[in-house]
Image (cartoon, rainbow, N blue to C red; front, side, top):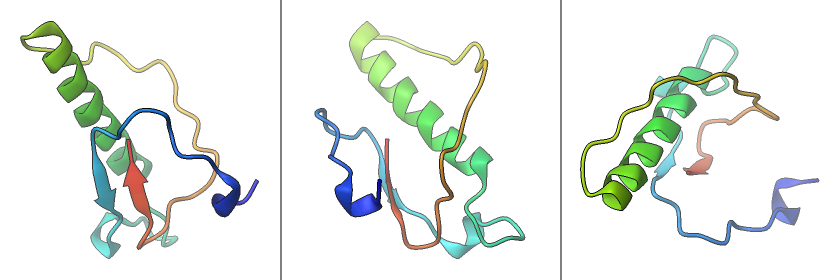
Length: 77
């Protein structure tokens, strides 16, 4: 499936940001840790709104990246 074939998510993104050169690894791809940080921030924001209080990440048991994110890509979480 190409990027153009993908359907947008049904819900609105909590975070939307453009991947920049400062976020790349030596191969020119965006660091997985940067992506995980965005996911954690988005999840925390949604959880805090839902719970009307504080929310923290306890653990991440696994993460699979299906394809690289490159500079200029819009990342929506």
